[in-house]
Length: 69
Image (cartoon, rainbow, N blue to C red; front, side):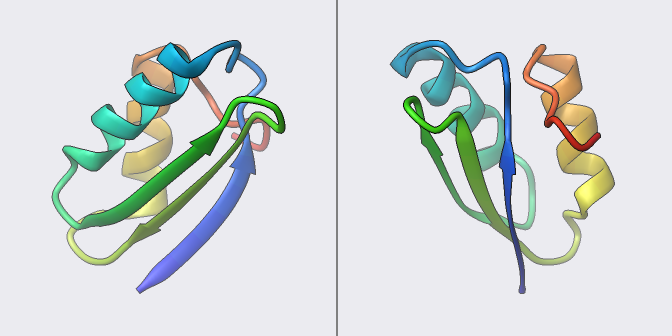
C-alpha cells in the first residue's frame, strides 16, 4: 500500500475537504483519505488499481490539484 501527504492550495473550508474525501474515496483501490482545512493537507492511502496519476487526475477534475502536480 502506498501513502502520500500533499498540499492542496484550493482548500478553504470543510466542504472542500468533504468533496476531496468523497471523490478520492470513490476511486477503486483508495483505502483512506483524510483532509485538513487549517493546513490544507490531504493524506491518501491506496493500492492497485489506484495510482498517483489517477489520484492527481481526479483532483484536477474537481479543481483541487495538489501543489506538486
